[in-house]
Image (tube, rainbow, N blue to C red; front, side, top):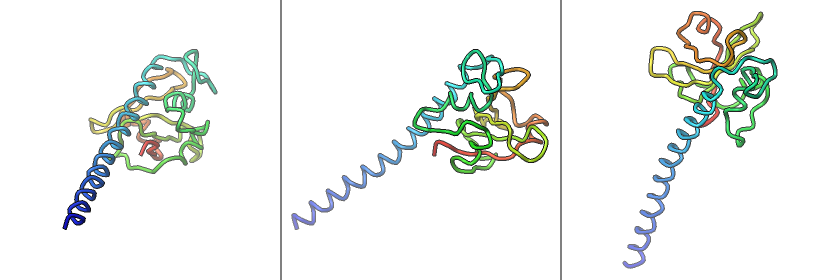
Length: 156
């Protein structure tokens, strides 16, 4: 009987550890996503520079690379980034998710942004615009809605 009680106690300890670690992992992912958004916002107003990755100038994929922690080794281009992580739907976007666009001719992905909020009808995202530098835009804007191609979750 004593062995059976010890087994149940051990089972409860292990089970509570598993349940706690799942909740802890979820909190960690949320914190990492919030950190990505906070890091990206530090670049607001930075001018656009093709291939740039610093406060003196950056492009869209440079912003993403500078905003994600080093443990996420992302490729350098928006097109290559669009193959990373897990695909997600627009209505399920969370802060820290990446959104991809076709802004040139053809169907090729040429632009990337980071979701900063999804509290409204359309998510807002931060990106480096060729004309205005690093800004926050809305997927509700006709231009971005028309050119949206897909979204990926890197932190999952």
